[in-house]
Length: 498
Image 1 (tube, rainbow, N blue to C red):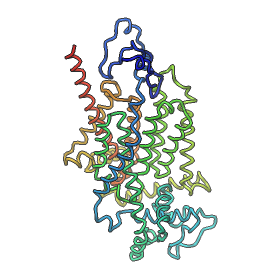
Image 2 (tube, rainbow, N blue to C red):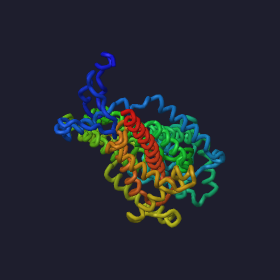
Image 3 (spheres, rainbow, N blue to C red):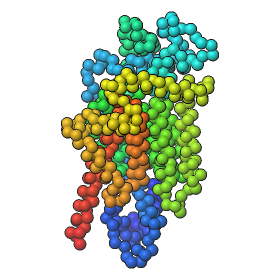
Image 4 (cartoon, rainbow, N blue to C red):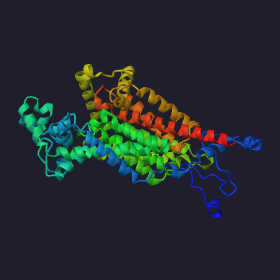
């Protein structure tokens, strides 16, 4: 080693100060999982604080993937999704597509002042109540209306407007067109022109989600695990189906992974309560819940990231709690709530009353759908029902390994993934960043538990988060098994050399 190399300081830890002893006489650290035997004096002087500092001494460059790889991975996923889409889908509407396009075109026009929510309704639906909230009337009374936040609808509607497509009819919804089947079919035909642009937007977001999944796995399981996770995610039939359909399920998943990626890369700044990192997390959470109500799970993840990154810092180097996690919670939480309000215009006149109406309408609609579809799809009325549906969603026909091999290998692979992640957390398997690993485990836990407890009945689209979680666990199993094999090989070579 030259003098220049020996004097180069080590990069600081992702969540703590750089380790001392980087001079020319410093011994290189033993790999995680290969424990060097300390001398008697070192053993007597060892303390939990020193061990914690050693654990926190992670190379920041190990968790940084080159940003150019993100669009490359997204492009690969996009090409795959586009190539596997059914050709007949171009000629017909899938379930809910016409409804989402109709409400999106209307919502954008109403936002820009070009139309009323009562436009296009039958004559008997036209009377306007006095002091009415226009974002809760007419077309917004459908399931796709005020019970769903506006961000995806604004994007779909803006795309349609940019393409010059402004026609729509509320007869596409059963409550308005059930007695007019011919009018319903005509209403669907009105939104055929903007369908392709909306589908391309959804396909792009699913592709970005696949790339972000790989980015979040890379600092934990390396590139082998990251690429395996991406491939498994794309292999899920449920994901392939959703990637070419005009639906909003992708939005909270994409923003949730974006928040996790930000937390892994900026863990030190988040632990210190830095302004821009906190606002970045709040932006991701706000966009998630501004897309779908179950995007609120991302807000819980963000709260966990703020606390866990702070706890990962050795006690003598921690920022005070009020300037660390508490500050991040307040900044991120405030921005998240502001964005949710921004994309929920029906709440503007009376927020508390609007939230109460939203809750009552949501519960009523879910009960109606349970009665309608529960017998065929399965319903969850208690904890056992939620767990049963969760297992179906996680291990059913859309599970990635099962879809690839036809064999029920998913349960075993996911258990191996969980075990490998826990072994990596204890240091028995080498991983580039234990802080990134901790945040990934928090994401998996919150999303799995939250999705399972939220499931009302067994609709296939409700199971989409399980496809993402399964791909992450199975990708982690492959990547960490690869690392463990390398670790054992290095140890064997070391023993042979001695």
